[in-house]
Length: 337
Ligand code: NAD
Ligand code: DAU
Image 1 (cartoon, rainbow, N blue to C red):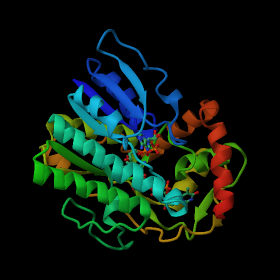
Image 2 (cartoon, rainbow, N blue to C red):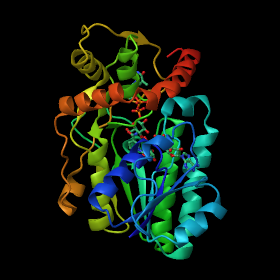
Image 3 (cartoon, rainbow, N blue to C red):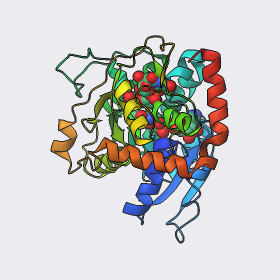
C-alpha cells in the first residue's frame, strides 16, 4: 500500500503515521504538509526515511490547496488519508480565510486529483459539523444528523464533507468520510484545551476555563481515532460516512479538575476567562455503525490512565512544545482568553 497522508506533521496525522509504522510496517507513506504553525517536524523525526526501498516515510512540504503539488502525489499513491486542515476554532474566529483555503479549497484540489486518477480517499472530519446538543438531550450525533456548524472552522469542515459527498454521488469516486469527537494524547498543539492546561500547570500557571466550564466534549484517545481510520480504510464501505467516538463525555471543569488531581494541585486552582463567541455546548457521538461494520473497538476506555500518560509525555518533552507555548499564550492574551 502506498499511502498519501495529508497533514501528517500535525497532531492526529503524525500519530497516524507513527501508529501505521507499528501496525502496517509494509505500507509506504508520503506525508504532504505545509508545515504551518500547527505542524511539528520533530513528531515525524523517528520514522522519516526509515524502512528499506519503497517501504519508507517521506515528507513533502506543500499545500493541499496547490493542485500542481497534489496531482502527482495522488497519481503515485494507492490511497489518500486527508487530515490536513486548519483545526483551531479560536483561530477561525480571529482569522477565517486560512480555514476556507486549507479546508475547502484544499479538499477540492484533492477531490479533483482523486477523481482524475481513480484513487481511494478517506476524508477526516469532525463531530463539530453537526453543531451542538443540549446538556440533557438524550440523543447523540449519528450519521443521519443534519449538518449545522457554528464556527468558521466547523463550517469549512462541513463544506469539505459536502464536497466529498457530492464527488461520491456525482463522479463515483471511492471515498469514505469519518467524523470524530475531541482527540487527546501526545503531540497535540499547546493551543488546544488539554495540552494548554497541562503545560500551564507545568509552568506554574492556573488552568483557564472558558465561560462556565460546563461545556461537554466527547473525548477519545488519538490512537483509538487512528485505529478507527485504518479499520475504515480496510473494512469500510466506499461512499459511506462513519462517526468515531469512544463514549468519553466530560465537561471542561471535570477535565481540569482531573488534571489538577493527577498533577498534585488543589481542585479549585483554576480561573474562568472570557467565553468563546458561539461556543458549542455539547458534542456526543453514537458510533454504533462503525462498531457494527468493522472490528474496531476503543482501547483507551479509562480517560484517567490516558491523561496520566499524556501528562507524562508533556513533562518529558518540553523541547517539543516550549516555543509554541509562548506564541499560543501571546495570542490568547490578545484575545482575552
Ligand atoms: P493540527 O492542526 O494539529 O494539524 C493539522 C496539520 O495540517 C498541520 O500539520 C498543518 O501544517 C497541516 N496543514 C494545514 N493546512 C494545510 C495545507 N493547506 N496543506 C498542507 N498541510 C496543511 O490538527 P489535528 O488536530 O491533527 O486535526 C487533523 C484533522 O482531524 C483535521 O482535519 C481536523 O479537522 C480533524 N479532527 C480533529 C479533531 C481533534 O480533536 N483534534 C477531532 C476530529 C477531527
Ligand atoms: O470535536 C472535535 C474538535 O475538537 C476538532 O474538530 C477540532 O479540530 C479540535 O480543536 C476540537 O475543537 P474544540 O473547540 O472542542 O477544542 P478546544 O481544545 O479548542 O476546546 C475544548 C473545550 O475546552 C471547548 O469547550 C473550549 C474549552 N477551552 C479551550 C481552551 C483552549 C477552555 O475552556 N479553555 C481553554 O483554554
